[in-house]
Image (cartoon, rainbow, N blue to C red; front, side):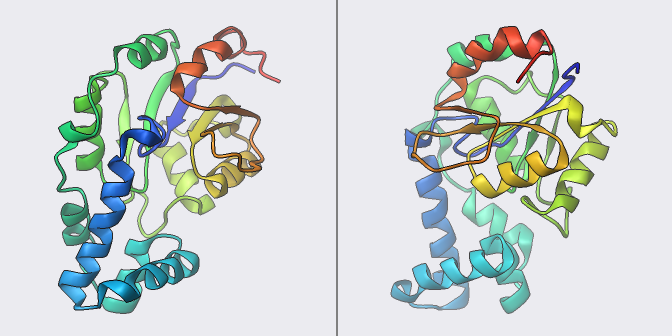
Length: 217
């Protein structure tokens, strides 16, 4: 099997989870709920847990129950000084350049945020496209429909020819069931049903011979 296409998650995958950026973004979600909906801060953690469990993402839950505007939410949440959290990453860039496959960002964030992140990492020229939550609406990862739309937007590629990298176990599970080769990115000790596990993207170099040799097992 020749692997032709990579799909990379964005937050906590394309950059290290210890950057603090994701923690800032989640704090911005809570601030949005507090400021826009006048909900006391002490009630928000449990509320967000319920929304995520019920609807898959905080944003989808807020849209369903409070009729928020998705663009307003995404702009508010992603209005952070990225330079305080991430910097150019020449080592990861070098490693990604060793893989000739076409590469896409596939994220539950929006394309503007993804573009900014890639710019600050110095990787904005490495990806053929960004498939964001608006592009797959009304679906989102880990829903299979979102993955099918992503495959179509990448040129109707066969999932068996694709490698999917993500830090969220449910996304990995859906991708594997659909035929993707899956790589879990993280070192939190979770029991994830992925083909391979790496702590960060730098470890992807260890898989170079088998991926480019099309003999992953």
